Image 1: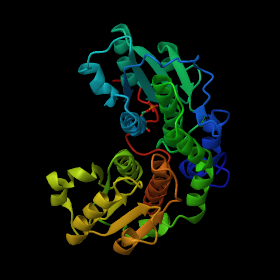
Image 2: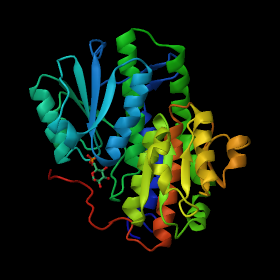
Image 3: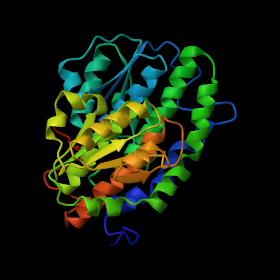
Length: 363
Ligand code: G6P
């Protein structure tokens, strides 16, 4: 267990480091009283002329990018997340008022670097959002925002997703503030919740029943994850983590997509993890009812532990009440723990899953 501080795996250690890594991500970057973010990396009004935002990334970083695109679009900024490998082949037009945000833990992913190079040579402005100082991505991009998560050893990204989403929330707030020229009540509420997020994540770690849930559904045929809005990206990330380290079949879907195909796969042998963010929960509850009617066990990830969601669910993984834009961060920690315990019960080599690498430097 050398270097693992008593944990059996780096992944488990890194999951538990999240309150601390998250504090570092936020440190000195939030003024919750004025409802503003302070990102010294960028001059005043640095993003005032941004017309649209393209977020490019792969793997877990792509899910963080999707999360941010949802937030930006909801605040009126045209924003789209792309898999970097696809963006390189079929990129929408860009101008010097297009901000291309490349999200990458390592800053060395070949597809992401290629996407940035092509966008830059077409005239876009580029920003690296990464964990690694002086990585190739920071050299290729016009600007850099570091996520400050600290070193991550486990191949499966955990604390870096949490810090990516959080740094992207800060960047989104800054872009919105520069574009609209004012801080808003909405921003103040969000940033106030953001400063409480490390404590919320700690509460999840202290009280999670994820191990019991993993045990209850061990040996299932497949594991499905659904959500809408930001919870869609969290569902995709939950499924990715699960399949990466357990080798079990796991898929994430938009809750709205269920009726258009995935429902055909749902049986008593396919537990469905339903992520509730606090937005559109009634619609998502209907989806939970639909899968339950087909016999599937429902595991709800929610802060609403005393209402209809909890009554319907076979299991609840609870998260503290927080701003709905941030609920996905705490929900994702629950899903990290489910994946970890499911893989551990199966005796998988959690820190080095077969066929996968921490960093993919070939296209
Ligand atoms: C690999 C890793 C993933 C990671 C992805 C993107 O697939 O196994 O954990 O999310 O690359 O890596 P990046 O360093 O660009 O975030």
